[in-house]
Length: 294
Image (tube, rainbow, N blue to C red):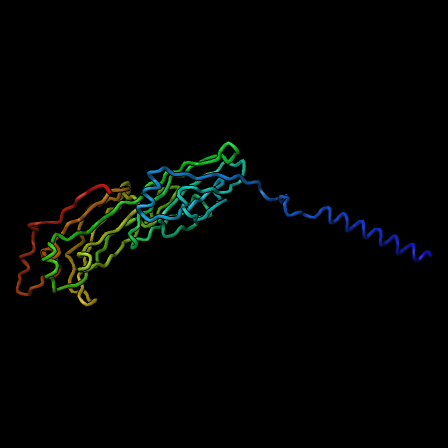
């Protein structure tokens, strides 16, 4: 009997322990003790912005939100006609920016370091909002964000007529190099990452070339244009020196460089060997630059 009593007491203690453990278990509908409370915040755009996105074929945007300098939210989301909501930590002072048409973003974990890169060859204008601060409390249900087309454009355009271009036989391709193009943009400091960009062009595009760039007008970097002539993939000529265009990129400003590509005064080597070096001098019709809005 004493042995049976001991077994009964042990069983009773085990049952009590299991019951207490089950009472302490997390239930699916309960919030984890360390999980921060979130608050849904909508992101809205003006009708004009939505129309611009439709014209540009933009179907998704990137939304990045930071607490102090650390990212708490960062995703590409479908534009969904401007009906967008994101869940953010409740009761925090946050900062956000929105971007569209970027090739990639690097160092997104830190607002002070994040860089937006464009695809210099895709010819897609990049749109970026200002960094906006807000407090994520229950009084904030929506943020109105405006994105700005944060690129300018440089265009190289031959002066020749279509008939003159069709008659060209000495070359079939141009490599047009734009120097000091801002391919990257630091969102917080607004500094730029500068590179040279070479665009290959041929008769199918009228030997024209273009590139987008983040703003450089406030910096010391000015853009020149260098032109190399090729035939069958081999270099056959180049211009004497890059065209000193003095272009500084501004948002939504287009600078078009007009040059007569068949004018031998520009060339390092004349096409005809019977020409004399003395022919090279001041150009009768130098390149011209046209600036316009786009």
